[in-house]
Amino acid sequence: MQPLQFLVPIDALESIDGILPIVVFALVVLNILTRLLQHNRHERQAEEGDDDEAISRWLPHTATTLAMVFASLLYMIVAPHGGMVMSVLVLGVFVTDFFEFESRKVEARSKSKDLEKPTAAIGASAFALLYASYQSFFFLIAPIWNSIV
Image (cartoon, rainbow, N blue to C red; front, side, top):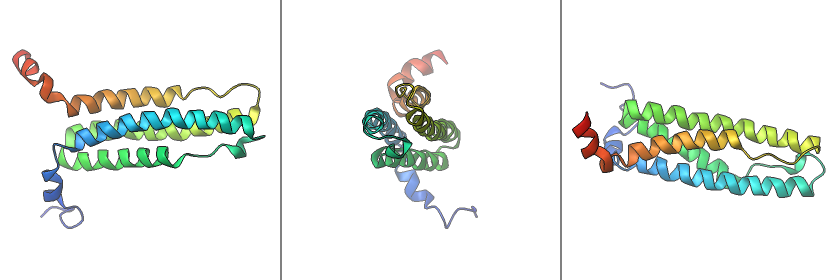
């Protein structure tokens, strides 16, 4: 008997095993787009407001980040090795998003310079995007990979 047998429907997850990496890939791409839109929104909020109180989180970006974390954890149940690597990368994106938001608030509070772009979060997202694309589209390079290895 598996410990999570009654909490997680593993048979249902195995039926969507092939789609989960593609879902994570799509969520990473969507997360990058919402991050860029959120940064534009933060710039407008910083110009309009007097303090860091004007800067707020954007719900679509937060939702895509949480969905990305949830999907990567589901993928870890189905494919332990690939899911673990994916989850670590996605959790890295989650942590950098948190600190990037806090740094935008500090920059808005100082008013001495413009808001910087979220380069750390974009870099973390790039690594997550590369690995998600590798997991999602491995079937395209599988013949070449198998002939070498």
